Length: 120
Ligand SMILES: [Zn+2]
Image (cartoon, rainbow, N blue to C red; front, side, top):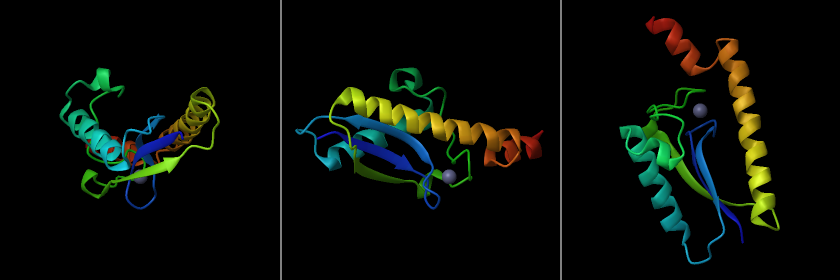
């Protein structure tokens, strides 16, 4: 079974990070602990590139500003027959969220856009 472990912001459930995997030996708890540990490292700027993050993680959701202390971790099932199909589905979701985020940034409606405008 292909699963997805994800870190979501508290209320609006924007995806902070997600990872699809196909390993029946890995418990949900272990997957969540692994992602949580990676998030904490990325927040500290440790091994950011090796972990697959584009840069040091900010301790807030870039879209709505929800603080890291309120982020939650969840396990989901990916409705895909193969890992290759799952990767396609997950990539599509990532592109959709990134595109939506880019529009919000361009319109000055994301938290990061607001923060940038008010700190410069
Ligand atoms: Zn958010």
